Length: 301
Image (cartoon, rainbow, N blue to C red; front, side, top):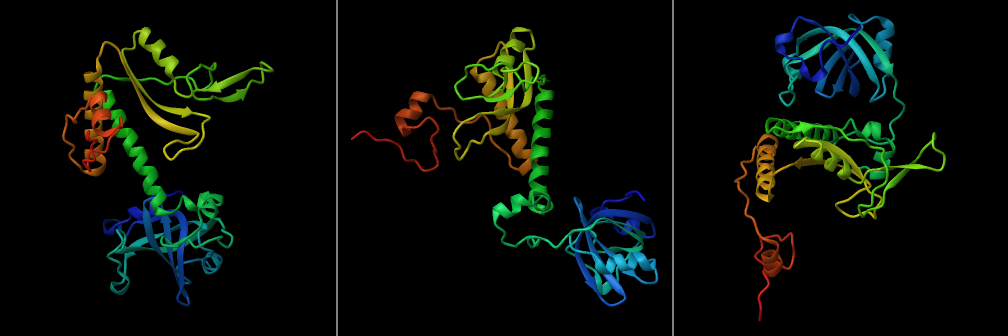
């Protein structure tokens, strides 16, 4: 058997088709001779009906003894749900799969915590069982959102004439301020590679070498004390341009932010942004990153 449809992708137009679904068991309801399974994957949930008439005895026994979050593969016919079981809250709420074969791919042990979306679970427990935590809709949504932001940023920069170039992760340590993480070299005993704080030296080489507009989605490492907005490793979009001034850089990034906010959040951002010289910001607010929403300006007595 091989998956033919995502669980969350079956619809009434698929009725009558034979489908194979793969996913984890989110819920099981034993009605005596008929077992309803909610099988979930990254796209959503499908209801699977298991009964003694359509399933071989061994497969029906597997359905009776399934633990929550076990991973199964199930083949059957997509059919219309009975009216009393129709679920308008689900995209798949009009259809179900009548199982004709069921295979347990990975049997779950008793769960360390409830997988209900609203369950209150300690963070350290969720991190210990991260593979279960990643099945939660909130985390899957966050991972997809990050993926879409990166795609939109790359599409915008590609359309503006930038070239995407990867730079090395292992290099000679360079004095840039923050401490490097070091990686010992097996082939050069006593020597170490440094994980770059940011690929600054490679940016400079590429600019001198004639790549006048390039970007990369760079992984950066800094051995610093933790702060609210800084962790040991993080990702940033690096842009480098030759023969430009400050206004050119600001204009390109205003366009990037406008595109991201529009595509990801449906928000129209007005550009150009208000620009404030450093001297004015320090004189009016005492900060080079003032929050101008509150109007708390410095006034000379």
